[in-house]
Length: 316
Image (cartoon, rainbow, N blue to C red; front, side, top):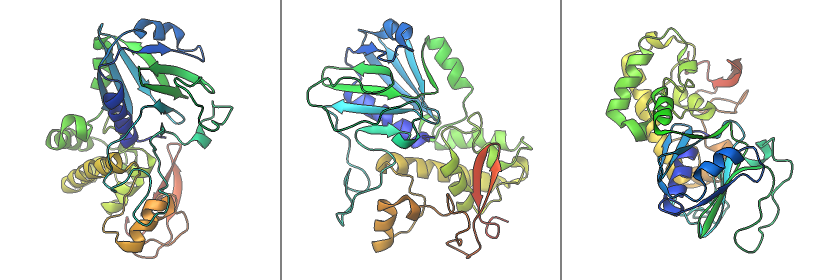
């Protein structure tokens, strides 16, 4: 599932290339046609990301809400650029090897191989603008010089301002929306009341926004925190530390387009981490492999339907 950094990157793309433009909105697939008609021909006035959801306001007061869910993604075409990343380049590291991006200039969200609703596979780029819609496009947003196609979202709907506020009110803090200090206070207050294991609370979007399975596993390991400890039994300083770590990792993810969760990488180790997902995480997706710190085999078990990875020694 696309995590918070991807949605903030999507919002950044829309702010750069669509905000302030009068756009044509359609539903080539047909499932969004009625809602699309409500915002077709209107001007985008602002774009916000909160956790895993994006909200796009139009000049007549209606909003588009999109939740990518497990399989959703936006594909961009036309005159699309992106700000330089913290890696210095958007496509290649300094050794010339290709970066294994979770997000790229053209597509942000779930990897194509996970988009169950996309029966076809996008082929070579089609010349001309705008390109014809390809596959199951739920929503197309066409600006004068750029186009964005949405496939496979969990939610895509037009809401009033009051309805948007009601959705946001149910979400936990996002470091880029609530600020680090205010968000930390909200997070601490909720966790301190909960008997639920902290490994579940980090994935609960009403507790904290944007964290998915990868960041959950990595934040817990970086804190050396057992996933199974009830939230109210986790020391407040550890809870605060995890919140600050999430704020840090979120910004790295937005800047780089990858979930780089290992600090202090230099030289060849950094080049490997940039180039391959297998070399950028402490515990995620490393079942049975030795812990990078203590050598204990990384464990995995299902927790509320998602795979949880942890080190039984360092996170005892």
